[in-house]
Image (tube, helix red, strand yellow):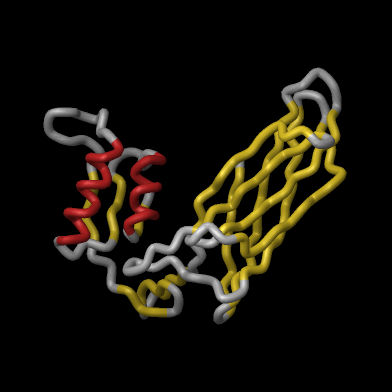
Length: 186
C-alpha cells in the first residue's frame, strides 16, 4: 500500500510517503523505490529515490520517504487540485511494480469552538448522509452514477457527505476527490 500525508507551510508542502513493499518471492530480494510527484498538469515537481532496500521471503518492508513541494497547488472544495504520486519498484534495471496514487495537498483542522478549517479557511459543513444505493441498481452503483450524484449534491450546495452504515467505496472516494467534496467515512 501507499499512503501520503501533507504538512502545508504557506506555499510549500512536505509530503510524508509510506510504502509497504511485499516480497511474495521464494528468496530475499533487494529493490529500489522511486517516487515521482506530478502536478495537476502532469509536470514533474519532486522526485525521491530510495536505493538498496531489501525484503525477506514472505515479508513486507516499510519504506518511508519525504518529498518537498514548492508552490503547492492546494486541494479545495472550489479547486480540487490532484497531484499524482508515481511509485516504481525496481530490481536492478527491471521494473517489478508501478502504482499511481492521487494526492490532494491540503491542511485540515478541527477546533471545538471554531469548527472546521480547510487550508486555514473556516468552512461550514453542509452535508448529507449517503446510503450507497440507488433506485434501479441497488448497491451495485456504477461509477458514473456516483459521479452524477455528487455533482447534483454540489449543485444543491452540499460540500460534505457522510457514508452511512458502511465504509464508502474507493470509487466514491475517488469521485469526491476529483469533484471537491469532503467525506466523513464511517
